[in-house]
Image 1: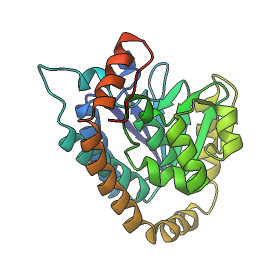
Image 2: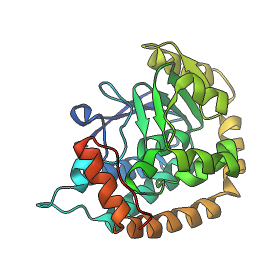
Image 3: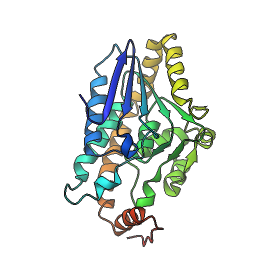
Image 4: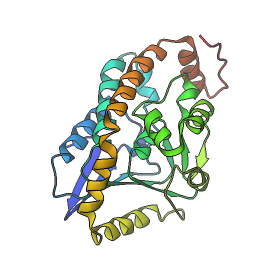
Length: 259
């Protein structure tokens, strides 16, 4: 059904796997579109009460696909991409399931925004989490501003966005960005065990509480997503973004000028 994802359902649990392991599950337009469609379809599936998210291969997701951004033959449509990204964040936040992110390897940029949009985040000790849009002259998208602020508050969110700091699982837990840390190699086992505990709980009441708490924030998330889309489209045209991308590809330090 999907080219870049795998969705499996078993009883009351669904597992959504990002499946571009050859590209560290970086998100091209196809994956963004498929994620939006997939998550929106789960909004209608009330038989599923827990959704597990993971990445195939050696990472959760390296974020947006930078190679796709540089492809001149098939130009990256930023306006279309931002529409998909906004749909992903909104669907994820309003799902009638408890969502669990299982993080191993990298969860960066848009991948990290998705992780933070989940109800429960389980990360392996040496996983690498970063809101690293700043390194290529961009702002967080996928609700990154909203989800970070919800987790750590505005002052700390600004520091993390501005620094693009790379955090290991343990450091991320100390900041409140991660709920549980698992030993390396045991993230998925920990996540599935957590899902089983939820199924043995009065989970309908838990989901109802989630929906009550999220309901008053939906408008704010929508507003932030609109602002992220407008700003990201503008940032894509800046000299700093072009320099950031060039430096990333050439593996050199960027020389930003604030333009």
